Length: 82
Image (cartoon, rainbow, N blue to C red; front, side):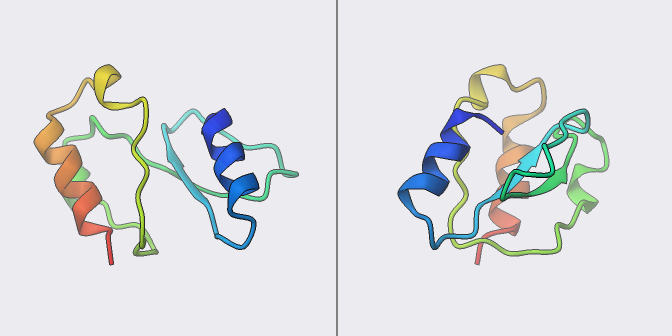
């Protein structure tokens, strides 16, 4: 969740924007986003299944801060693409 999420929703008001973020992230109830909390460093990441598949995954400003194996994380993201 970042200002980029808000900008994306503003630019594409008919899009359903869903946030996947760290376990400690919460959203204000007034935010128009659904939130799924995922620990990308979890040893169980290969077994995490989100309830949605996505047409587009925007993975911005994350890779340089990643403390997990990027191949595992990218595989997780790919599994959730339509």
